[in-house]
Amino acid sequence: MDGRRSAGAGAVIGVAVMAAVDEIVFHQILGWHHFYDRSTPSVALLSDGLLHAAELLALVGGFFWYADLRRRRVLAPRAAWGGFLLGAGAFQLFDGIIDHKVLRLHQIRYGVHLLPYDVVWNVAGGVLLLAGAVLTWRARSARNR
Image: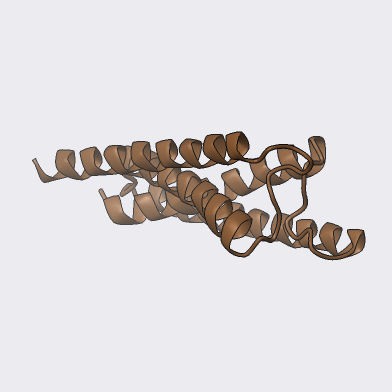
């Protein structure tokens, strides 16, 4: 079993899935923001399209990597799930801290008090990251026994 590569493939898929959830739910369905809100509506829409293209490439690449590990019979499923949660949590925290607060590319929502949204967004990312770290650590511990 190849725990590191399994976790890596899972992490790429996790980042892509969380980016897709963000883009589909918050950008398209709810219309709360775009990836880049500091310009014209056309630029905002273009930025969403570029994010969507990147997430699809990551998703396809991650699944090809995952399938290759399975084909070679070296996939460590628990490590892959741990990597998935790590990737999803890392994307969420990066988006919440770097994109929202440091770079100010967009906010979660406009016209509301942001603190509750920021807390829920970042705590959810932290929980995903912590769950992924625990699962990955347990997978590594089980392999070393």
